Image 1: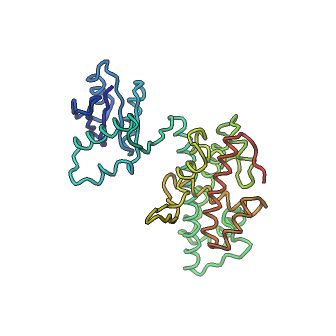
Image 2: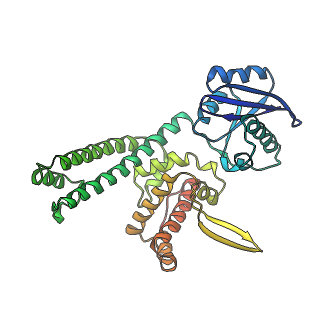
Image 3: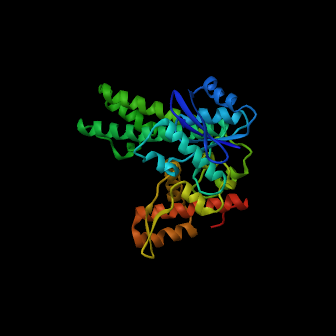
Length: 337
């Protein structure tokens, strides 16, 4: 067995081949494209080998290349490679060598690593469209704030019955009442187009995973619609990836930082590692659930609200909601309040 550490950059990749005993066999500098990466594969010939690289924007195409060849390929989180990233003697050759040696130790079970899960292209496409939907929602929020700020600066009144700008009657009022304000009309036009696009994307997302039992189970939880259920599954992908609810919560940054010093364990703020989109969605669905369902989650939220305030209580309740989601998906059993 040979272990290859890859230091991947946009145009070039450095590969360091490590022997079974830990000795450096060969270092190759190639282009980060199929023809260049093929040089590494050709050099290995019939020898069995495994590759590993640090997680980055450029690691995907390199990972896909070796995966397509049937090579055991791994992408490791940067936090597991602090010994490299914080080194004062950083070179591509040295980094590739360190990654290769760490890979060897990990494969031998002599150290732990935080390995990135790389979705299939189809899974990635679903996640991307869900992320795009969130981006549109944020854009809509920004456009609303700009419209309101513009109207306030220009002393333009917006009656209470027209306060919801997403309604046709509010849009019609602004068009008719302030028709001569070209900037306001353009801003309103941008907002309306974004609304239409969000609706189109929402319909696209809701039509995804039509035969998914997981989506149906999540949709039964009050506060989670079908579109949101698809978004959640686009990030979880397979609940079997997680040993327990703690691992799932940790993956999405919904666990507190823990410091053990002097025999005392201290719990701090949530780590907020992993996908920010998942945390935003969890807070959103948890708030909706609390408002409309008297469940164990709602009762838990109200207890915590007295202890730590509204914002922290919502984050903590979001974590509890995620543990409920874990149980529902693992047991394939509907949620009971």
